[in-house]
Image (spheres, rainbow, N blue to C red):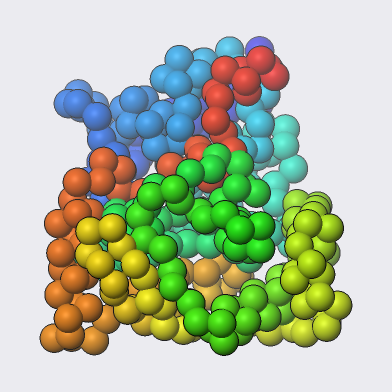
Length: 306
């Protein structure tokens, strides 16, 4: 076992012991007998098996994939510098300035969870869903795909599939649909300029051009824009029709997008949001699984890479 392998396990244990078990982003399991989070807590949040996390901490699994590292950084609520150090210890190259960074900092995680009365989702610069709070899952349903491509809003929209097989369905007029399409494509073109070394983004664009005539036509216009806020009407299986303001907040430095849904105080839609809170309380996960978002669907698969 090398010094880096020992250090990787030591740092994982230290970060786990340091984590605040009272933080709302932590999904706890059972009783804790020591400070911080149990292995079961971290494994559940990261979408890994407890056995695999144990082997990482003991230095017996020494080549975790980048997807596993992203999931662990999010589960342990690491800062960007700590996330990069985790990558270096694992002999992986940290995300660079030319590629999209989907890392959610502890502050953004807390903000997402503590806006508990509103549905909130976090997307990266390519509009791939990274995280969502309970009310977002209650509103739009649990995302049905595991890979980043399946979690990508543009891919789902232009290929005619939804992010979720359950939950609400956005209703758009022909004009609203055309405006959404044009804005989404222009925003993605801006992303290619900001992240020229991101192979995943380039592949997404190439596949959309080849798979959607509408996307290809809009891409040929060479428009560049930032997707802005709008109003969405959603047909929900339990709430019926609800119309919400959809504000897009951009995190400086990472281009993460916080999409926040709200309704005017005292309106019928605001009352429906309160009812959504009751539905959201029944959602078992406080946050969309980071493992699913990162495509970490099989920890055993990553273990075979050791």
